[in-house]
Length: 97
Image 1 (cartoon, rainbow, N blue to C red):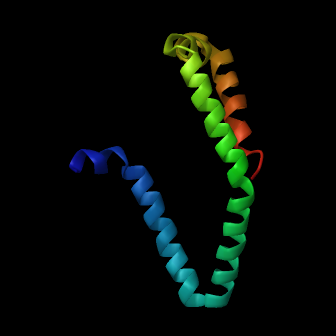
Image 2: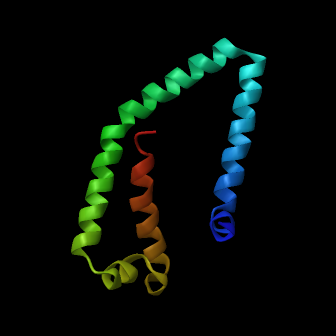
């Protein structure tokens, strides 16, 4: 359990901070917070099909490409072009946002 907490400490801290701010927002203005959460949920539902397609595509990609090939493309040996390729491919996930 302690290893789990150590591994995900940053994620846990960020989510706790978000939860604290959400509770603060609920206390300050309950109606505005509910409205914001409804908008966020609707946005999530609109993005969900694209996210599912991207996850499936990545799953197929990982199934067909051996780890060595992926490492050559975006790993340490790839240098600047590898970082650039990973950045471009990773930014595709943020297009719907």
